[in-house]
Image (cartoon, rainbow over all chains, first blue to last red; front, side, top):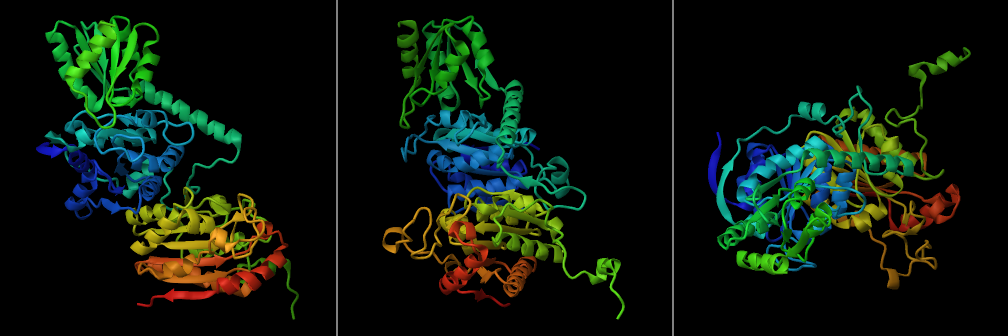
Length: 360
Length: 259
């Protein structure tokens, strides 16, 4: 039976991954997402579902624990915030290269450097363009509510295993710390060893005499072999782009102007749309739910019947580049954002729309 | 005395030595004279003798033994440089009944992976760590390792390791022996048949500890040569190891926790 609770975003995510049948969480404390591990340790899932929860000595160790667990076919995850996610990038690159499924939560905080603990969206480039070394992509989910923090716990694992690819959930301190009503899904069982052997036949679980040994590696010394692997990865990312693009639109049908925003920014834009419409300006909102794959096609389509677009991000302007790639020179695309952990107000969004697109 | 025929020699009961069952037919990529091949072999012999092939997940490091999975006929995971103990931690926590070991060189275990090594040992993970110490970075062309001896010449200390400038060689094995999470810490070598037998016995003890759930890290250092990196013949390298490495890295058990 489904269950309603009032929860913080970080806690809803933690509860959801237990219910999603996670086998292991490996993390290191960092604000503003420490509640994830705190909640898991308090719930003691190792006594109920058998899920392992371990505080690692570093973000680097944590992501490599995820690498190890995923290499053996287990549902494993880690969570962190921007500086910690930077530390994990080497491991994430290995995981992407070895095509291992896992879930990573980044509660983005203002940067660069140690920056601030307040909400930010300045890790968009890092999240969607690779992050670590080499040509690879993560599937990037951008929750805008506590409900989505919980839902993406399930969706994240499902996509990760469907494509043998790491899934990044790109949240921030606002989504993680605020409390909302959340409908929790039912507990699903963890994989049995028989299921792991059947569903992830590549996993290193111990070699029986009936098959060749399984090797999980990201090393290919022969450049042609490496290129073959690169081509295979790129083909997979193309399939992901074709099948997994997720977004939602609000009041775009009659809109003259479109706000493009994800996560916390999208919530502000809901109010900005109302403020604009109260003034007689027809504004709609497109909210990317997946940042990779990016909703290029629907944005390109909207560009054929609107006058301009404003990419609203809590950054210096990162997603706006993808919006411009989608739109080309069909309509004017501008960026508005605050940085350093400052959340803009809906009034500021409307003023930016008026000055940059309508009045400008 | 009857004449021994070729057929007699081939009878299973007359076999005195044969290729290790759990080694693949791939040609070893190690330099002739290197200790890695022997170390690989005795680890695989122990896994075979204990009947653990279907339960074992090995972890290969970055370094000369990065391709261990080409030679060991078991399921293997290749880890990022230095991170093998973290990978091993997760594997053992998620599969407590399986046999998990890491196989790491000195750069991997004692430099870039120091934190992972110390914390896995301190947590008392029920795993085996095989540590090959040859005092040099072989794969990248013979640079200074954390275990390079004072005065020893490498590509990045061409005039010899200067302690004031480059710091001291690190005795990682003695260090992990001080941690409560290690139950068996030993230093061995594979440069003579007698030492190979001793090293194999130590490895067997380490894996016995894990499979008997003794609850802690069993840590086996193997002091080995790197004749290519040391720029010596294999024979010279083994002698140099006896004369120079063993006085600083003495062989024998450092910590043995009995029940």
